[in-house]
Image 1 (cartoon, rainbow, N blue to C red):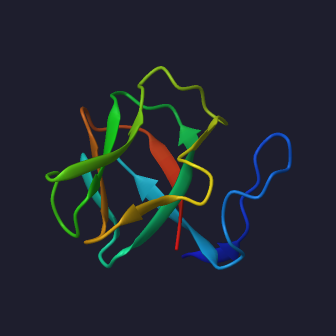
Image 2 (image 1 turned 180 degrees about the vertical axis):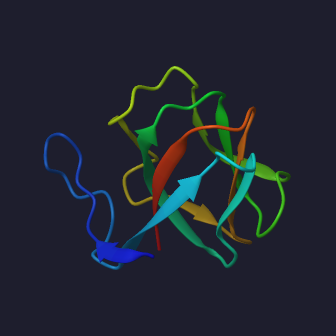
Length: 111
């Protein structure tokens, strides 16, 4: 279930429009997850459960291929927000996330 939100950084600078949505991303059963199957922007991710591997985010509607638009190290602590450029990173095809190992959860902020 997604929810419309506005993302701000630690200094309360707006890094996403109010039209951004939060999308839960669960790597516990599969290492590849489609965050958004259509063009858009990704503003950042929040680590919500310990990652067992690194996460690479791609500009792709369905596969772990193409342009890399984000990266989250496996050592990133739960509760850490990882921003991707103020205003977000554009994705021309869609947004997928590939974990190097199953396990862990994120919340992605996209529009």
